[in-house]
Length: 489
Image (cartoon, rainbow, N blue to C red):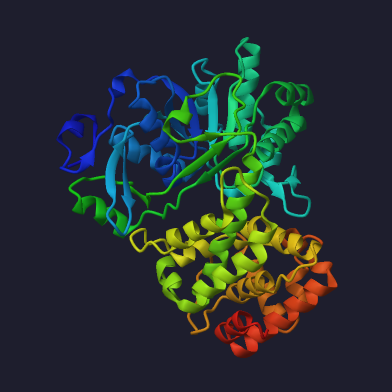
C-alpha cells in the first residue's frame, strides 16, 4: 500500500499512523536537508509532540542541492509522509510520520526557499547539511571565506547557492519588513554547532553587507544542540523491508530505537514544547556534546578502520570480532573516558556500555563503509582532539594514534586482503597519494595541517605515529592491535 493521506487509516496491522489531524498543522519550521537522519530524529520528536495537541510547529522541508530536489519529488508523491522503521534484536516497530506538511522547490538562486523563510509564521530555520557543510577552515577551526561557494554567494547575495546565503537573504527581507528574525538551529553533528553556524552566517554576510552582519550577530539566536540516532542510508535492503511490511515508500528510514536530543534553550521567537517528548533543554550542551563526539563518534572510527581493512561489511559484524570489540573498549576506557568532562545525570561508564550495545545491534545493519566515510572531516572533530587532550595531560595516546595510522593505511586504497577500496572521502584522491607516500615516509601524513593542525609537529606524537604505521604495514593491523591489547606495543 502506497503511503499517502488517503491510506493512513488503512495501514497494515502493526504500523502506526500520525495520532493527530494533519490538516490542522501549520508550518513553524523550515528545515534544510531532509535526509534520513532528520526524518528519523527531529521529525519523529515533532510527530510525538503533535499527538499531544501542539500543532503550530509543522516542518516545511527544504534544500539547496540536487539531491534535495530528488527527495522533494519523492516525498511530494506520498504527501510528505515518511515511514520510520525502528530496529532492535528484541523486535522493533514501524510508524508513518506526518510532521512535514510541504517541501520548498529546489532551484538555483533559492528564490522559493528565501520566500518561505521570510514568512512570518516561520520562527525556526533548522539545518542538517552534514559535518562537512559548514565551510570550516581545518587549519584554524573557523569559517573560511575562500571556498568557491562562499565567494559566489558573497558576489550574488540576492541569488545565493548555499543554505547560509539563503538564510542571510531571508533575514534581510524580514528586517526590511519589520518582522522578528527566526532562530537558526543546527542539527548536525558538529562541535559547538550553534557557534559554528553563527560563524558561517555572520561570516558570509560580512563579505557583502557588513551592517547586516552586525545586525544578525546582535539579533539572531543560534542555539547549540547535540543530536544522536544511528540511521543507516537507504538501499535495496531498506526498500524491501518496507515492502515486506506491506507499505510502499520510495524513501523509507530505518534506525535504532535509541534517540537523544539536547538543546540550549535560546529561542527568542518561540519554540515547540519538545521537553514534553523527551528532549533535554540545558545550558550544559557542551558537556553532552563532548561526551557523544568523543565516545560515540570517536568509537565509530575505532570500529571502522580495522573493520574496513578486514573487508567487514556491517558494523555489528565488526563488533562480533573479539579483537575489534576489545580494541574499542580499551581505547575508550584508557584514553577517551578519562578526558571527557562530567555530564549532568550521566555515568560515562554506563554511556560507553550503551555505545557498545548500540553498535552491536544486528537489525540496524549499519555499514563499516559509512563509518569510514569522510575521515578528512571527521578525524579532526572526533579523534585528533582526543589525542591532543591526552598528550596535554601527559597520558598515553597509543590507541588513538594507532587508530590514526589505521586510517592512513585505509586511505592507501586497498584492504589487507587486497580488495580495492572505492573512494570514500571528498578528498580521496589527495588522501591516497599522501597515504602512498607515508608508507615510506610516515611524516608526510601528519604534514596535512588542514587535518592535524600543529599536532603533527609534536615530536612524541610524530615518532609514535611513524612507529605504528610502519608496524601496520610490516605486520598487518591484527598483530599490531593485539600487541596494543596485550600491553606490549
